[in-house]
Amino acid sequence: MTTPKANKILVLGGGGFIGSHLTQRLLEGGYEVTVVDLFDGKISEYIGDPKLKFLRHDIRARDWGMEELVKWSDLVIDLVAYANPGLYVKIPLEVFRLNFTENLHIAETCVKQNRRLIQFSTCEVYGRTVASIPAAGLKDPEDPKHATFSEDSSEFILGAVNKHRWIYSCAKQLLERVLHAYGLEQGFNYSIIRPFNFIGPKIDFLASEQDGIPRVFSFFMDALIHSQPLKLVNGGVNRRCYTYIEDAVECTYRIVENPGGACDRQIFNIGSPENEVSIRQLAELMREIYRRKYLKPGQALSEIEVVSGEEFYGEGYEDSDRRIPDITKARKLLGWEPKWKLGDLVEASMDYQMECHLNQRLVTQQTGG
Ligand code: NAD
Ligand code: UGA
Image (cartoon, rainbow, N blue to C red; front, side):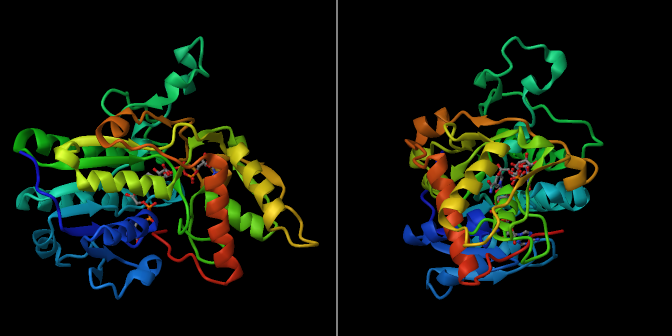
């Protein structure tokens, strides 16, 4: 049985980076949207739209109205999480509680009320590659096939328990497994999204302007603006595939629309396999764009400095070495194709950040820490 088209959508965490862009797209698509978040800074421009309701709630509180809101909705999209690696190291228990326990309450409310759920998970569930394990003794460790992850067949490889960075991956993985089990045993209708390093306007915040630990793009922007070194954790050898938020939201929107029920009980990688880059290359690219477009006369261009993971994040940090999304499923079921190339998407993200900085507009909000 397929779910009828949704009209009323509850977006939990809709005030965040991905949520704010998704909210905009849903409003453009004519949906009625209720956003629940601790912050509204990133969606302030849409507040006043008659189709949008913003409710400031902490989903960890009891009696914040979850039951009524889920009942009101046709579809729930859950983006609430601590999503920055610095937090996995600093407050692993809180990461588990929010990203698993609290999200489970939401999922179980959807099960009870028979509402479709789109759950944001992570590409971090895949963990490390087999090529990162020396004992695997691969003949061709650089072959991208060892780092290309498929939703329904790849193995998950995580580090030891005392490397608590993996609690994020593990909590998200467990949540996925519970959703799968509800689907299997009770016919629960969900879709899971595994994002691969989305970047773009409104990502995170600059640590010099707010307390907290953002993701790498914001660390590098902050360093460039203030002529501080770009710190490469463990030499910046690890690789990521960067995905522009516009491409990511387009794919998510198609999952919301769920043509012919194609997304029922499906997991989707969303990412740009062509945009692979090492963190050192990302630093060099951002440095070069900054030099060309934004360096002021007399301003020093940031240098690059190597730091250890422990020094930068603290004890318990370990890293995903490489991850390339297999997006065959999104291509086939949704006709989706990412359009943005690495150089363009990094430059567009930097342009937005610089515009905020030059107009002294905060890219607001801190989550956790
Ligand atoms: P984000 O931090 O910008 O968004 C999360 C939102 O949740 C924030 O607006 C935050 O205020 C809200 N929130 C946190 N705790 C809350 C609470 N107790 N009550 C109510 N709201 C709360 O992060 P994002 O990058 O937009 O990520 C959204 C989702 O996608 C997360 O589940 C994350 O794990 C997942 N994800 C994102 C990426 C990416 O590339 N950005 C990659 C992998 C996974
Ligand atoms: C993050 C988070 O785990 C999640 O938001 C999400 O699941 C995932 O991104 C994603 O976006 O797909 P990660 O890519 O490790 O994971 O997060 P970043 O903080 O952006 O770090 C990327 C890489 O840059 C890591 O290797 C990190 O060690 C390195 N880094 C970070 C630096 O070299 N310098 C810095 O200043 C910051």
